[in-house]
Image (tube, rainbow, N blue to C red; front, side):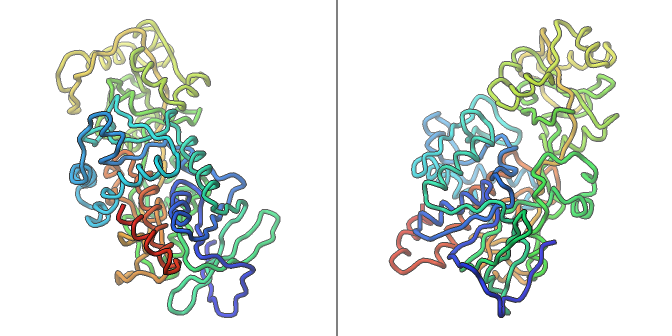
Length: 474
Protein backbone atom coordinates (compact mmCIF):
# COMPACT_ATOMS: atom_id res chain seq x y z
CA UNK A 1 0.00 0.00 0.00
CA UNK A 2 1.37 3.42 -0.95
CA UNK A 3 1.79 5.62 2.11
CA UNK A 4 2.79 9.16 3.03
CA UNK A 5 4.69 9.88 6.26
CA UNK A 6 6.11 12.99 7.94
CA UNK A 7 9.67 13.81 6.92
CA UNK A 8 10.60 15.19 10.33
CA UNK A 9 13.35 13.10 11.89
CA UNK A 10 13.73 10.83 8.84
CA UNK A 11 17.31 9.87 7.94
CA UNK A 12 18.16 9.53 4.25
CA UNK A 13 21.10 7.34 3.20
CA UNK A 14 21.60 9.53 0.11
CA UNK A 15 20.00 12.52 -1.56
CA UNK A 16 19.77 13.62 -5.19
CA UNK A 17 18.29 16.70 -6.91
CA UNK A 18 15.60 14.78 -8.80
CA UNK A 19 14.07 11.37 -8.18
CA UNK A 20 11.79 9.74 -10.75
CA UNK A 21 9.41 6.92 -9.87
CA UNK A 22 9.13 4.64 -12.90
CA UNK A 23 11.42 3.98 -15.85
CA UNK A 24 9.01 3.73 -18.76
CA UNK A 25 8.74 6.27 -21.59
CA UNK A 26 7.64 9.06 -19.25
CA UNK A 27 10.33 8.53 -16.64
CA UNK A 28 13.14 8.03 -19.13
CA UNK A 29 12.17 11.14 -21.12
CA UNK A 30 12.01 13.16 -17.90
CA UNK A 31 15.46 11.85 -16.97
CA UNK A 32 16.88 12.94 -20.34
CA UNK A 33 15.49 16.44 -19.80
CA UNK A 34 17.12 16.63 -16.37
CA UNK A 35 20.47 15.45 -17.65
CA UNK A 36 20.37 17.93 -20.53
CA UNK A 37 20.08 20.62 -17.86
CA UNK A 38 23.10 19.21 -16.05
CA UNK A 39 21.02 18.01 -13.09
CA UNK A 40 21.68 14.68 -11.41
CA UNK A 41 18.72 12.31 -11.56
CA UNK A 42 17.92 8.81 -10.30
CA UNK A 43 15.19 6.60 -11.76
CA UNK A 44 13.56 4.15 -9.34
CA UNK A 45 12.13 1.09 -11.12
CA UNK A 46 10.25 -1.57 -9.17
CA UNK A 47 11.09 -4.39 -11.60
CA UNK A 48 14.42 -6.08 -12.27
CA UNK A 49 14.11 -4.96 -15.90
CA UNK A 50 12.68 -1.63 -17.01
CA UNK A 51 9.95 -2.53 -19.49
CA UNK A 52 6.50 -1.49 -18.32
CA UNK A 53 3.53 -0.56 -20.46
CA UNK A 54 5.72 1.17 -23.05
CA UNK A 55 7.09 -2.20 -24.16
CA UNK A 56 3.56 -3.53 -24.64
CA UNK A 57 2.55 -0.63 -26.90
CA UNK A 58 3.08 -0.10 -30.63
CA UNK A 59 5.55 2.67 -29.82
CA UNK A 60 3.68 5.38 -31.72
CA UNK A 61 3.96 9.00 -30.60
CA UNK A 62 1.71 11.58 -32.31
CA UNK A 63 3.33 14.95 -32.95
CA UNK A 64 2.89 17.92 -35.27
CA UNK A 65 5.29 20.16 -37.19
CA UNK A 66 8.09 17.60 -37.23
CA UNK A 67 10.99 17.23 -39.63
CA UNK A 68 9.64 13.80 -40.57
CA UNK A 69 6.31 15.33 -41.59
CA UNK A 70 8.03 18.07 -43.58
CA UNK A 71 10.14 15.51 -45.43
CA UNK A 72 6.99 13.54 -46.32
CA UNK A 73 5.12 16.68 -47.41
CA UNK A 74 2.58 16.39 -44.57
CA UNK A 75 1.09 19.73 -43.53
CA UNK A 76 0.19 19.85 -39.86
CA UNK A 77 -0.01 22.42 -37.09
CA UNK A 78 -0.74 22.78 -33.40
CA UNK A 79 -4.28 24.02 -34.05
CA UNK A 80 -5.14 20.97 -36.19
CA UNK A 81 -3.70 18.51 -33.70
CA UNK A 82 -5.59 20.22 -30.87
CA UNK A 83 -8.79 20.10 -32.91
CA UNK A 84 -8.41 16.34 -33.45
CA UNK A 85 -7.84 15.69 -29.73
CA UNK A 86 -10.71 17.94 -28.68
CA UNK A 87 -13.11 16.47 -31.22
CA UNK A 88 -12.41 12.95 -30.02
CA UNK A 89 -12.86 13.78 -26.32
CA UNK A 90 -15.71 16.26 -26.89
CA UNK A 91 -13.64 19.08 -25.39
CA UNK A 92 -13.48 17.35 -22.00
CA UNK A 93 -9.68 17.65 -21.62
CA UNK A 94 -8.15 20.80 -20.05
CA UNK A 95 -7.68 23.24 -22.95
CA UNK A 96 -4.43 24.68 -21.62
CA UNK A 97 -2.90 21.22 -21.17
CA UNK A 98 -3.94 20.11 -24.65
CA UNK A 99 -2.35 23.21 -26.13
CA UNK A 100 0.86 22.89 -24.12
CA UNK A 101 1.37 19.24 -25.04
CA UNK A 102 0.53 19.72 -28.72
CA UNK A 103 2.84 22.76 -28.95
CA UNK A 104 5.73 20.77 -27.47
CA UNK A 105 5.08 17.55 -29.39
CA UNK A 106 7.09 18.50 -32.48
CA UNK A 107 10.06 19.93 -30.56
CA UNK A 108 10.10 16.81 -28.38
CA UNK A 109 10.31 14.47 -31.38
CA UNK A 110 13.09 16.62 -32.83
CA UNK A 111 14.92 16.61 -29.50
CA UNK A 112 14.71 12.83 -29.16
CA UNK A 113 15.90 12.17 -32.69
CA UNK A 114 18.49 14.92 -33.13
CA UNK A 115 19.87 15.27 -29.60
CA UNK A 116 19.55 11.72 -28.33
CA UNK A 117 19.79 9.57 -31.45
CA UNK A 118 16.41 7.86 -31.11
CA UNK A 119 15.33 6.84 -34.61
CA UNK A 120 11.66 7.65 -35.14
CA UNK A 121 9.91 7.36 -38.50
CA UNK A 122 6.67 8.93 -39.66
CA UNK A 123 3.95 6.33 -40.20
CA UNK A 124 2.29 7.66 -43.34
CA UNK A 125 0.94 4.60 -45.14
CA UNK A 126 -2.37 4.75 -43.26
CA UNK A 127 -4.21 6.99 -40.79
CA UNK A 128 -5.21 5.98 -37.30
CA UNK A 129 -8.81 6.84 -36.35
CA UNK A 130 -9.38 10.45 -35.43
CA UNK A 131 -6.21 11.90 -36.93
CA UNK A 132 -6.63 14.33 -39.83
CA UNK A 133 -3.08 13.80 -41.12
CA UNK A 134 -0.18 11.41 -40.63
CA UNK A 135 1.50 12.37 -37.35
CA UNK A 136 2.43 9.05 -35.71
CA UNK A 137 6.18 8.67 -35.09
CA UNK A 138 7.56 5.25 -34.20
CA UNK A 139 10.60 2.98 -34.43
CA UNK A 140 11.00 1.16 -37.73
CA UNK A 141 9.66 -2.03 -36.12
CA UNK A 142 6.56 -0.21 -34.84
CA UNK A 143 7.11 -1.96 -31.53
CA UNK A 144 7.04 -0.29 -28.14
CA UNK A 145 9.79 -2.59 -26.87
CA UNK A 146 12.19 -0.97 -29.33
CA UNK A 147 11.15 2.53 -28.24
CA UNK A 148 11.72 1.54 -24.61
CA UNK A 149 15.14 0.06 -25.45
CA UNK A 150 16.19 3.20 -27.34
CA UNK A 151 15.11 5.44 -24.44
CA UNK A 152 17.00 3.25 -21.97
CA UNK A 153 20.16 3.46 -24.06
CA UNK A 154 19.83 7.24 -24.38
CA UNK A 155 19.28 7.55 -20.63
CA UNK A 156 22.39 5.51 -19.93
CA UNK A 157 24.45 7.64 -22.34
CA UNK A 158 23.19 10.79 -20.64
CA UNK A 159 24.50 9.73 -17.26
CA UNK A 160 21.15 9.17 -15.56
CA UNK A 161 21.22 6.57 -12.80
CA UNK A 162 18.75 3.67 -12.96
CA UNK A 163 18.00 1.66 -9.82
CA UNK A 164 16.02 -1.52 -10.51
CA UNK A 165 14.30 -3.75 -7.96
CA UNK A 166 13.52 -0.49 -6.16
CA UNK A 167 9.83 -0.39 -5.28
CA UNK A 168 8.81 2.99 -3.87
CA UNK A 169 6.39 2.44 -1.00
CA UNK A 170 6.43 5.68 0.98
CA UNK A 171 6.79 9.41 0.41
CA UNK A 172 8.26 11.52 3.22
CA UNK A 173 6.66 14.96 3.24
CA UNK A 174 7.27 18.16 5.21
CA UNK A 175 4.39 20.10 6.76
CA UNK A 176 4.16 22.56 3.84
CA UNK A 177 3.74 19.68 1.37
CA UNK A 178 7.32 19.45 0.11
CA UNK A 179 8.40 15.89 -0.68
CA UNK A 180 11.71 15.34 1.08
CA UNK A 181 12.36 11.78 -0.05
CA UNK A 182 11.05 8.25 -0.50
CA UNK A 183 11.46 4.80 0.93
CA UNK A 184 12.19 1.91 -1.41
CA UNK A 185 11.70 -1.79 -0.75
CA UNK A 186 13.92 -4.49 -2.22
CA UNK A 187 12.81 -8.02 -3.21
CA UNK A 188 14.96 -9.47 -0.40
CA UNK A 189 13.02 -7.50 2.22
CA UNK A 190 15.61 -4.78 2.73
CA UNK A 191 15.04 -1.11 1.97
CA UNK A 192 16.39 2.38 2.30
CA UNK A 193 15.28 6.02 2.32
CA UNK A 194 16.53 8.39 -0.39
CA UNK A 195 16.15 12.15 -0.23
CA UNK A 196 15.33 14.44 -3.14
CA UNK A 197 14.95 18.04 -4.19
CA UNK A 198 12.06 17.20 -6.53
CA UNK A 199 10.03 14.09 -7.26
CA UNK A 200 8.48 13.08 -10.60
CA UNK A 201 5.78 10.43 -10.59
CA UNK A 202 6.08 8.45 -13.83
CA UNK A 203 4.63 5.19 -12.51
CA UNK A 204 1.68 5.05 -14.92
CA UNK A 205 -1.90 4.44 -13.80
CA UNK A 206 -3.93 1.85 -11.90
CA UNK A 207 -4.80 -0.75 -14.53
CA UNK A 208 -3.04 -3.48 -12.55
CA UNK A 209 -5.12 -2.79 -9.43
CA UNK A 210 -8.45 -4.69 -9.78
CA UNK A 211 -10.03 -2.89 -6.83
CA UNK A 212 -9.32 0.55 -8.30
CA UNK A 213 -10.46 -0.55 -11.76
CA UNK A 214 -13.73 -1.81 -10.30
CA UNK A 215 -14.15 1.47 -8.40
CA UNK A 216 -13.42 3.88 -11.23
CA UNK A 217 -13.98 1.84 -14.43
CA UNK A 218 -16.68 -0.75 -13.67
CA UNK A 219 -17.11 -1.53 -17.39
CA UNK A 220 -13.62 -3.05 -17.37
CA UNK A 221 -13.90 -4.90 -14.06
CA UNK A 222 -12.92 -8.47 -14.85
CA UNK A 223 -11.78 -7.65 -18.38
CA UNK A 224 -8.38 -8.74 -19.61
CA UNK A 225 -5.68 -6.25 -18.66
CA UNK A 226 -3.12 -5.87 -21.40
CA UNK A 227 -0.74 -3.70 -19.44
CA UNK A 228 1.98 -3.88 -16.84
CA UNK A 229 0.89 -5.47 -13.56
CA UNK A 230 3.04 -2.99 -11.67
CA UNK A 231 0.58 -0.19 -12.49
CA UNK A 232 -1.02 -0.25 -9.06
CA UNK A 233 -2.21 3.34 -8.74
CA UNK A 234 0.36 4.53 -6.22
CA UNK A 235 0.49 7.99 -7.79
CA UNK A 236 -3.23 8.52 -7.16
CA UNK A 237 -2.97 7.10 -3.65
CA UNK A 238 -0.07 9.38 -2.74
CA UNK A 239 -1.87 12.29 -4.35
CA UNK A 240 -5.01 11.74 -2.33
CA UNK A 241 -2.95 11.65 0.87
CA UNK A 242 -1.37 14.99 -0.08
CA UNK A 243 -4.64 16.70 -0.98
CA UNK A 244 -3.99 16.55 -4.72
CA UNK A 245 -6.82 16.73 -7.24
CA UNK A 246 -7.54 14.00 -9.74
CA UNK A 247 -9.14 14.19 -13.18
CA UNK A 248 -11.18 11.90 -15.38
CA UNK A 249 -10.75 8.78 -13.29
CA UNK A 250 -13.20 6.88 -15.49
CA UNK A 251 -11.18 7.45 -18.66
CA UNK A 252 -9.04 4.70 -20.15
CA UNK A 253 -7.56 3.28 -23.30
CA UNK A 254 -9.24 0.10 -24.31
CA UNK A 255 -8.47 -2.02 -27.35
CA UNK A 256 -10.87 -4.19 -29.28
CA UNK A 257 -8.22 -6.29 -30.96
CA UNK A 258 -6.07 -8.37 -28.59
CA UNK A 259 -5.49 -11.87 -29.99
CA UNK A 260 -6.87 -14.50 -27.66
CA UNK A 261 -5.62 -16.67 -26.07
CA UNK A 262 -2.25 -15.48 -27.39
CA UNK A 263 -2.40 -12.03 -25.72
CA UNK A 264 -0.88 -10.20 -28.68
CA UNK A 265 -1.96 -6.71 -29.68
CA UNK A 266 -3.25 -6.83 -33.27
CA UNK A 267 -2.74 -3.59 -35.19
CA UNK A 268 -5.89 -1.59 -35.89
CA UNK A 269 -4.40 -0.73 -39.28
CA UNK A 270 -6.11 -3.89 -40.52
CA UNK A 271 -9.49 -2.32 -39.74
CA UNK A 272 -8.62 1.15 -40.96
CA UNK A 273 -7.48 -0.23 -44.31
CA UNK A 274 -10.58 -2.28 -45.07
CA UNK A 275 -10.84 -5.13 -42.56
CA UNK A 276 -13.96 -5.85 -40.50
CA UNK A 277 -14.89 -7.43 -37.19
CA UNK A 278 -17.59 -10.06 -36.81
CA UNK A 279 -18.94 -11.83 -33.74
CA UNK A 280 -19.40 -15.55 -33.04
CA UNK A 281 -22.47 -15.48 -35.31
CA UNK A 282 -20.40 -14.18 -38.23
CA UNK A 283 -22.13 -10.79 -38.08
CA UNK A 284 -20.66 -7.29 -37.98
CA UNK A 285 -21.79 -5.31 -34.94
CA UNK A 286 -20.27 -1.82 -35.14
CA UNK A 287 -18.42 0.84 -37.11
CA UNK A 288 -14.82 -0.26 -36.75
CA UNK A 289 -13.58 3.17 -37.77
CA UNK A 290 -14.94 4.87 -34.64
CA UNK A 291 -11.79 3.85 -32.79
CA UNK A 292 -10.10 0.86 -31.24
CA UNK A 293 -10.51 2.13 -27.68
CA UNK A 294 -14.31 2.18 -27.58
CA UNK A 295 -14.30 -1.04 -29.61
CA UNK A 296 -13.05 -2.86 -26.50
CA UNK A 297 -16.45 -2.47 -24.83
CA UNK A 298 -18.30 -3.45 -28.00
CA UNK A 299 -16.27 -6.64 -28.40
CA UNK A 300 -16.75 -7.59 -24.76
CA UNK A 301 -20.51 -7.15 -25.25
CA UNK A 302 -20.55 -9.84 -27.96
CA UNK A 303 -21.29 -13.54 -27.24
CA UNK A 304 -18.38 -14.98 -25.30
CA UNK A 305 -16.71 -11.58 -25.16
CA UNK A 306 -14.86 -12.26 -28.42
CA UNK A 307 -14.82 -11.15 -32.04
CA UNK A 308 -12.96 -12.02 -35.22
CA UNK A 309 -10.83 -9.60 -37.23
CA UNK A 310 -11.47 -10.55 -40.85
CA UNK A 311 -9.35 -9.24 -43.72
CA UNK A 312 -7.48 -10.44 -46.79
CA UNK A 313 -4.04 -10.98 -48.27
CA UNK A 314 -3.56 -7.29 -49.09
CA UNK A 315 -4.13 -6.29 -45.45
CA UNK A 316 -2.10 -9.28 -44.28
CA UNK A 317 0.90 -7.78 -46.07
CA UNK A 318 0.25 -4.47 -44.32
CA UNK A 319 0.13 -6.21 -40.94
CA UNK A 320 3.54 -7.69 -41.66
CA UNK A 321 5.06 -4.24 -41.07
CA UNK A 322 4.30 -4.67 -37.35
CA UNK A 323 6.43 -6.89 -35.15
CA UNK A 324 3.44 -7.87 -33.00
CA UNK A 325 1.52 -9.02 -36.05
CA UNK A 326 4.47 -11.11 -37.22
CA UNK A 327 4.54 -12.67 -33.76
CA UNK A 328 0.82 -13.46 -34.03
CA UNK A 329 1.49 -15.25 -37.31
CA UNK A 330 4.37 -17.23 -35.83
CA UNK A 331 2.25 -18.32 -32.88
CA UNK A 332 -0.60 -19.58 -35.04
CA UNK A 333 -3.13 -16.87 -34.23
CA UNK A 334 -3.78 -15.99 -37.90
CA UNK A 335 -6.12 -18.20 -39.92
CA UNK A 336 -6.01 -18.31 -43.72
CA UNK A 337 -8.47 -19.75 -46.24
CA UNK A 338 -8.96 -19.70 -49.98
CA UNK A 339 -12.66 -18.82 -49.76
CA UNK A 340 -15.33 -17.67 -47.31
CA UNK A 341 -16.75 -21.17 -46.80
CA UNK A 342 -13.44 -22.59 -45.63
CA UNK A 343 -12.75 -19.51 -43.50
CA UNK A 344 -16.16 -19.85 -41.81
CA UNK A 345 -15.41 -23.49 -41.05
CA UNK A 346 -12.10 -22.61 -39.40
CA UNK A 347 -13.75 -19.85 -37.39
CA UNK A 348 -16.75 -22.06 -36.51
CA UNK A 349 -19.23 -19.36 -37.55
CA UNK A 350 -22.23 -19.58 -39.96
CA UNK A 351 -20.99 -19.29 -43.53
CA UNK A 352 -23.96 -17.31 -44.84
CA UNK A 353 -23.59 -14.63 -42.18
CA UNK A 354 -19.82 -14.34 -42.68
CA UNK A 355 -20.19 -14.10 -46.45
CA UNK A 356 -22.80 -11.36 -46.05
CA UNK A 357 -20.53 -9.43 -43.69
CA UNK A 358 -17.63 -9.60 -46.12
CA UNK A 359 -19.95 -8.53 -48.95
CA UNK A 360 -20.54 -5.25 -47.08
CA UNK A 361 -17.02 -4.17 -48.06
CA UNK A 362 -17.91 -4.12 -51.76
CA UNK A 363 -18.62 -0.79 -53.42
CA UNK A 364 -18.48 2.81 -52.21
CA UNK A 365 -21.41 2.85 -49.82
CA UNK A 366 -22.21 3.23 -46.15
CA UNK A 367 -23.06 0.20 -44.08
CA UNK A 368 -25.88 0.06 -41.48
CA UNK A 369 -23.36 1.12 -38.80
CA UNK A 370 -22.37 4.28 -40.65
CA UNK A 371 -19.01 3.17 -42.02
CA UNK A 372 -18.03 4.15 -45.55
CA UNK A 373 -16.22 1.43 -47.50
CA UNK A 374 -14.00 3.18 -50.02
CA UNK A 375 -10.92 0.92 -49.84
CA UNK A 376 -10.71 -2.10 -52.16
CA UNK A 377 -13.16 -4.81 -51.13
CA UNK A 378 -11.94 -7.88 -49.28
CA UNK A 379 -10.93 -10.63 -51.68
CA UNK A 380 -9.53 -14.17 -51.44
CA UNK A 381 -7.38 -15.40 -49.84
CA UNK A 382 -8.95 -14.42 -46.53
CA UNK A 383 -7.46 -14.15 -43.04
CA UNK A 384 -8.94 -13.99 -39.54
CA UNK A 385 -7.78 -13.59 -35.94
CA UNK A 386 -9.84 -14.32 -32.84
CA UNK A 387 -9.66 -11.32 -30.49
CA UNK A 388 -11.11 -9.94 -27.30
CA UNK A 389 -11.50 -6.50 -25.77
CA UNK A 390 -8.99 -5.41 -23.16
CA UNK A 391 -7.95 -2.57 -20.89
CA UNK A 392 -4.58 -1.23 -22.01
CA UNK A 393 -4.06 1.59 -19.56
CA UNK A 394 -5.98 4.07 -17.47
CA UNK A 395 -6.20 7.73 -18.54
CA UNK A 396 -7.39 9.25 -15.29
CA UNK A 397 -4.88 10.51 -12.77
CA UNK A 398 -3.45 13.47 -10.90
CA UNK A 399 -4.38 16.95 -12.05
CA UNK A 400 -1.26 18.71 -13.32
CA UNK A 401 -0.35 22.17 -14.58
CA UNK A 402 1.14 22.89 -17.99
CA UNK A 403 4.54 22.44 -16.29
CA UNK A 404 3.66 18.99 -14.99
CA UNK A 405 3.21 20.21 -11.40
CA UNK A 406 0.73 18.22 -9.33
CA UNK A 407 -2.19 20.44 -8.29
CA UNK A 408 -4.20 20.42 -5.09
CA UNK A 409 -7.99 20.51 -4.92
CA UNK A 410 -7.76 24.31 -4.80
CA UNK A 411 -5.63 24.46 -7.96
CA UNK A 412 -2.42 25.31 -6.12
CA UNK A 413 0.70 23.38 -7.20
CA UNK A 414 2.43 21.20 -4.63
CA UNK A 415 5.94 22.59 -4.02
CA UNK A 416 8.13 19.98 -5.72
CA UNK A 417 5.91 17.17 -6.97
CA UNK A 418 5.42 16.48 -10.69
CA UNK A 419 3.61 13.82 -12.70
CA UNK A 420 3.33 12.69 -16.30
CA UNK A 421 2.09 9.86 -18.48
CA UNK A 422 -0.48 7.59 -16.87
CA UNK A 423 0.17 9.03 -13.40
CA UNK A 424 -1.37 12.31 -14.60
CA UNK A 425 -4.86 12.93 -15.94
CA UNK A 426 -4.64 12.50 -19.72
CA UNK A 427 -6.15 14.16 -22.78
CA UNK A 428 -9.03 11.74 -23.27
CA UNK A 429 -11.81 13.39 -21.31
CA UNK A 430 -14.13 11.36 -19.13
CA UNK A 431 -14.87 8.28 -21.26
CA UNK A 432 -13.32 5.43 -23.23
CA UNK A 433 -14.52 6.94 -26.51
CA UNK A 434 -12.44 10.06 -25.85
CA UNK A 435 -9.14 8.29 -26.38
CA UNK A 436 -7.41 9.43 -29.57
CA UNK A 437 -4.82 7.02 -30.94
CA UNK A 438 -1.46 7.71 -29.37
CA UNK A 439 -2.74 9.80 -26.45
CA UNK A 440 -0.94 7.55 -23.98
CA UNK A 441 2.58 7.93 -25.35
CA UNK A 442 1.89 11.57 -26.25
CA UNK A 443 1.31 12.37 -22.58
CA UNK A 444 4.12 10.09 -21.45
CA UNK A 445 6.83 11.47 -23.70
CA UNK A 446 5.88 15.13 -24.03
CA UNK A 447 4.63 15.67 -20.49
CA UNK A 448 7.59 13.64 -19.25
CA UNK A 449 9.96 16.07 -20.92
CA UNK A 450 7.99 19.09 -19.66
CA UNK A 451 8.00 17.77 -16.09
CA UNK A 452 11.69 16.91 -16.31
CA UNK A 453 12.55 20.42 -17.46
CA UNK A 454 10.45 22.04 -14.74
CA UNK A 455 11.88 19.84 -11.98
CA UNK A 456 15.41 20.43 -13.23
CA UNK A 457 14.83 24.18 -13.35
CA UNK A 458 14.11 24.26 -9.63
CA UNK A 459 17.32 22.36 -8.90
CA UNK A 460 19.66 24.23 -11.24
CA UNK A 461 22.45 26.50 -10.21
CA UNK A 462 22.32 30.00 -11.67
CA UNK A 463 24.94 29.04 -14.27
CA UNK A 464 22.64 26.28 -15.57
CA UNK A 465 19.43 28.30 -15.82
CA UNK A 466 20.16 29.77 -19.25
CA UNK A 467 20.46 26.28 -20.74
CA UNK A 468 17.16 25.18 -19.23
CA UNK A 469 15.36 28.31 -20.46
CA UNK A 470 16.61 27.62 -23.98
CA UNK A 471 15.39 24.00 -23.72
CA UNK A 472 11.95 25.15 -22.60
CA UNK A 473 11.66 27.62 -25.47
CA UNK A 474 12.51 24.82 -27.89
